[in-house]
Length: 528
Image 1 (cartoon, helix red, strand yellow):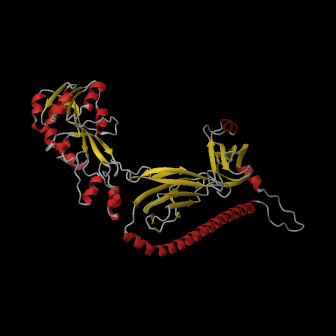
Image 2 (image 1 turned 30 degrees about the vertical axis):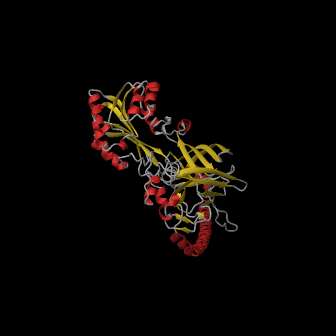
Image 3 (image 1 turned 60 degrees about the vertical axis):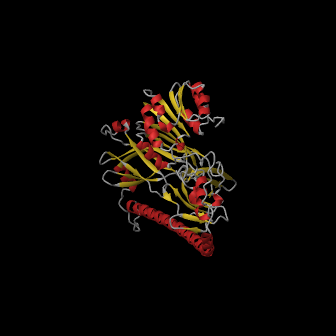
């Protein structure tokens, strides 16, 4: 029998997509049922009522044996419309049928009259601009065949934009648009990318519809929430290997990213504290890769790579002689974000190869100079930071002891003369403020020293605030809260937040010089 083949109900097949869309118990009109395998499945497995329209007499007679109703005749004569007059259907099917018609738009317009208000027209249609076909066309070939993309019985051809116009003309809206895929070399056509000039292979491979073998459409009279799939392409997906190196081991993991949709082009992951370097490896091919990294939102200034050339906009050119590789240093214990995108991957043209050979020696010199400049910049930055730290420590120490000298009794006493008694800084401080430390606790896990107590200025009867210089500890936090028992004992207004909790990060429990500040700005240094 003509078209006598097994039906593939997998949803990645044309009839499989149609069958999956149809609800059990539906009323169906099927145009061009062929050998009736889909018809039989809908009747038996989904309890559907299926009517058919078929031009081939042998096929019509065969399918009519199990279909509920049928019309023998040409689809485009519209005689079937008289036969089914007054009926409407939940689903109307065109499984690889419309491409055989002369005027699919008129057929769809007519079919619309037989569709329920919420019904669907389900269509599968071959993609004439599949890369397998375009490769032949590029080489001035058009190998028509008895089946497949270039079936010699096909009369109508549409592209993605062409379908929109056809459906609009028929008064139909796209409910679902999806695709079936086959790569070049997997179709019935004998074509390969090697049949194209090197200069155009990459552009062919990256075409959004280049591997779409068939379209699948669900059409409705009216729809508000269309589902339009993004066409995929096996050439979009690339792998990047991430290697975290410590002094003793390497931990490797591979990540796929989509060069067209952007999926995983930005990756973020924590870096362990003992990691010495992180290496990113890409595909072993000539390529032009855009690559950058961030730490805490700040762009990484230095990235080591084996690229032949690096541009100002973070693009790296690799000639294919080595595995494209990027290495990042000084990222331990931080959250690292990287951005990667292939601007080009594939064979280099002869012109590009010759240009690279001329540029390579100059690029190598530039790389050596840039490495030296980067090293000097890092050394200079370290010297600057060290100098800044020393300056701060010196200033803090100077300020502290100048304050002590002015407040303590350091005057030279004349011989054989007794000086009049004078109040010391501690006595002055005791009169000026009331301060009590209740407890001190250092947590060895968090490295946080917690100090609890209370303090007020005696003159203003107001809580003190507390400061700690950054040179004593990298982290300091002062929390203030109400201590009702203190307010009662010191006769302070209710709600006065005289209590405090000081949190200081340090490697061990020790004393710190805390600055207590009154509301009027007067301050005292207290060792706690």
